[in-house]
Image (cartoon, rainbow, N blue to C red; front, side, top):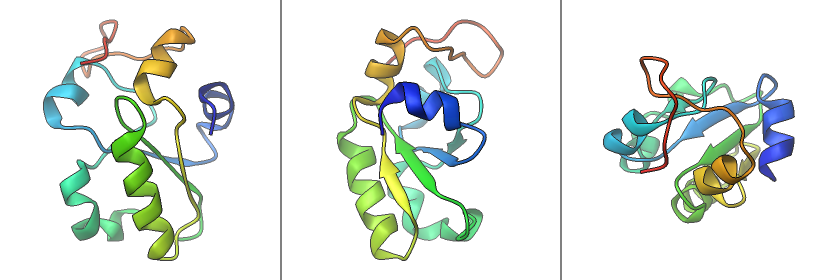
Length: 105
């Protein structure tokens, strides 16, 4: 999914950020749920099976793998094309957990 479409649909989908904690702390999309990649298989119960999932990471590689795994588990899942790098390049809003402007780590 392109970042502009994700921004428009961010309240309709479950946005799952699969980056590591230090990346999440540097900057995150406000509506995202943080589930690091390694924890996705053990935290599936946190996701609503009736709502689409969109995964995001720094560049789109890890989140692409996570989206594929989620599809194999029966979820409707898409990856964010270009990840947080594309989000930042599109000048879309993201912040640190304390509300300061975010950066891609």
